[in-house]
Image 1 (cartoon, one colour):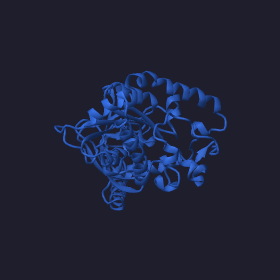
Image 2 (cartoon, rainbow, N blue to C red):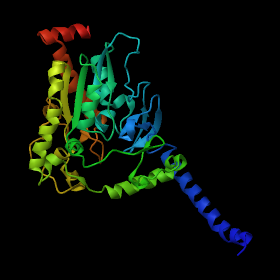
Image 3 (spheres, one colour):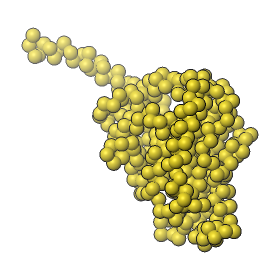
Image 4 (cartoon, rainbow, N blue to C red):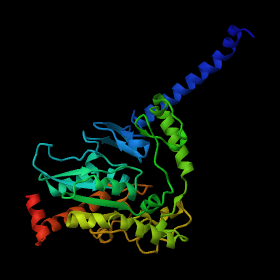
Length: 342
C-alpha cells in the first residue's frame, strides 16, 4: 500500500479522535470554569525524593469541591495571609506538617498558618512548612532546618502519619508542577496533557475508584495494635533530642481523625476501623482532643478527612493559645521567650 493510500486511510479516524478530545476539553473547561483540579505549585525535592513548593507560584483550582487560590511565597512556603513584610521586626513561628498544615482544599486565608497569624498579630511571622504527602521523617528533617531558638509547632495527622513512618506509601511524583496522579502511572507525560482539564477530570475519577477504600488509620486498625505501639515509640524518639535542645519553644499537636466524628465515613476505610479505641497518643501540647469536642463533622471538608475552614480555625486557636501561654510563662525560659516576642 502506498504512503498516500495509508494517509487517506487514517486521516479521518485521526481527525475524529482530535475533534473528540477537543470537545472533551471544551466541556471540561466549561464545567470547571477554567479552573484546574491540580495546583501546579510543586517541584521535586533534592535527589528527587518527595516534593517541595515552587517559589512565587500560584494556581486557581477546584480542590475537594471548593474554588480556592493556592499560592507560594518567595521562600517556597504556602503563603500566609497577614504576615508582615520580611523587613519588619517580627518573631518567626514555624508550622511543620503535611497536607493538613499546607491546607489542602483551603484558600490561602483559611489555612492553619493564616489563622495562627491572625491570632498572634503583626508582631509575628508565621511560616507554613506544610508539604502534602510527607510524614514524621520529613517533619524531623524540616525541624532540623529551623534555628533552635525559634518558635516551632509540629502538627501530626492522626489518620496517616504512622503509616507514613512505616513507609507503606512512597513519595509522590512531581511532573510539570503537578503531583502526578495514579493515572499517570509514573510515566513522564507531556505538560500539555497534565495541564489538560479533561485529563485531570479523568485522573480524579480513576483515583476515586483506585482509592475507594483508604487504609484504616493504623491506630484504629483491628490487627495492628503492636505495630501502632512500635511506630509511635519510633516517632516520639525522633523528637527526644529536639525537645532537649528547644525546650518550650517546640510545640507538638495533631489533627484528630475524622472517623471519630463522622461514623458514616467508616465504610470508606479497609479493614473496618475501630473508632472506639483511644486516640493514638501523638505528643500533644495543645489539648486538641478537648478543642475539637462539639465540632463534629463540620470541622472537616465534605466527604474528606482534611480540615474545613472551621476546623483549621479551631486548631489554630488552640495552637495560638499555647504559644501565648508559653511566651508569658513566669520562668527563665518564659522570660527569655517573652523578651524575644516583645
